[in-house]
Amino acid sequence: MPGGGPTGGQVLRRAIRGQRRRVATGSLLGAVHQGCEALVPVVIGAAIDTAVATGSSQALLRWLLVLAGLFLVLSNCYRTSARLAEGAGERAAHRIRMELGARVLDPRGGADANRLPGALTSIATNDARRVGSVATVLAYGIAATSALVISSVALLRISVPLGLLVLLGIPPLLWLGHRISRPLERRSETEQERAAHASGVAADLVAGLRVLKGMGAESAAVARYRTTSRHSLGAALRAARSRAGHEGAVLSLTGVFIAVIGIVGAYLAMRGSISIGDLVAAVGLAQFLLGPFQLLTYVNAEFAQGRASARRIAEVLDSPAAVEGGESAVSDGPAGHLRLTGVRLGSLHGVDLDIRPGELIGVVTGDPAAAGDLLLCLARERDPAGGLIELDGVPMTELAPDGLRRSVLVAHHDADLFETSLLDNVRAGAEGGAPVDEALTASAADEVARLLPEGGDTVLAERGRSLSGGQRQRVALARALAADTPVLVLHDPTTAVDTVTESRIATRLREVRRGRTTILITTSPALLAVTDRVVVLDEGVVTADGRHTGLVAGDERYRAAVLA
Image (tube, rainbow, N blue to C red; front, side, top):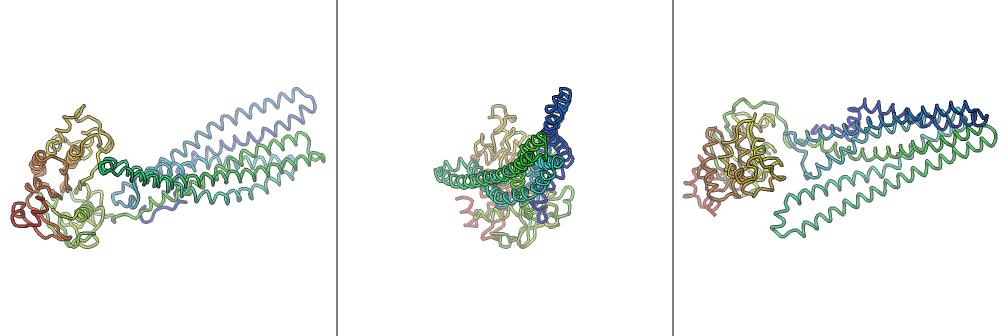
């Protein structure tokens, strides 16, 4: 996976290998279907020679029964083959989506680096579908190839020159079709990249729609999306032109080839080398060959687009991890002792901080970048460039990220809510169905529930947009408290809450987190007033450490930061 993941070709092979039974069965039934279709003109030719030419009604009836049997078999084989092939494609696409989901949700992170959420969504939907369709079209391709082989054998029995013409002409045609598909593959990859970027920009703009309206920046947002959309449209049109050119070129080549077969067959019939029935069969086979050739053209185009999408999927699966995964498990019931020694990352230039078990500590910094970098380190979304962070005496880099995050929960300021009920949002943080009443009360989210039409069972809109900013913050805080982790890091959890409610939350927060380590990264006086102590970060280092009241009285810079 990360750092040593698959190539685009391996993604394709894995998708097909996982559905090989369905593909094989679908291919076999498809080959039977195509074989029966190829035999139809042969049977008609035989009927002309043995029944029509001789005037035998019995012979004609026998051949009609044979034709009926052929159509019965090919009809049933087609339906079953198509069902198996399409099912293989859907299952392959589903498996790829699951792999992508697992990679994006990998605790080590890294898959979302330099990728907008909308772009990842596009890869997990459109690209996964295109790669999955390779399993479908492979069955079609094998069936079409079988039809070409059966037609060649039938033509060899009618006339060796006709059979050899088909056998020797098919490989160059297939090779030319593959060469012609190269531009389509390149342009399909560009098309998917531009489409994914446009989806990402659109999702980004929709997520920030309220902010954009508040700033009066709608026109700038529209101009940005218009430019991105035009680039995506241009790439899509170039890919469409390339596909049309590819299909037209291959169709022209196959048309010329089939015409040559018909001309050679007519010449042989004129010389008496083949019968009228054989000529009818040969012309019928030549016309039938157009279907397999068109099918192979479609298969080739799908493979070209599938290869382009597979490379994009491989890039996500092979994204380097943001942090190296540790192997050690977090001990049961850790005390929650955090120690930072000389931590350097971004705006942090050597942070030394010892947070005792069960302590409620405030962290104040005037630099948002420093707060963000500290959150990244504590959540282990990034490992420090220098220094060490320990949990209960064990370096975080030695702990498995998923186990660590069950002990250290970092609740970001901009945490989103899910499109489900308020209570389900809060319960998402609780382990094993633990009661969440205390968390709802401590965060004042119970007041939010009482205001909703169906109380806590009211389904929230996407990202909780049906709530106000302060209501969303209270529900997000309740979710974090319901998790009841040994260490909880909260970043500005009450910035959109009124002063009276904030004071109640501050008091209740101290009570509900008693005995558990809690870090409040905030400048809120109400929250800082209930902490055991406050540390001040200035220019990336700890410059002050003390009680809130003492710092307000004796530190002018602190007073300006929290009371401004």
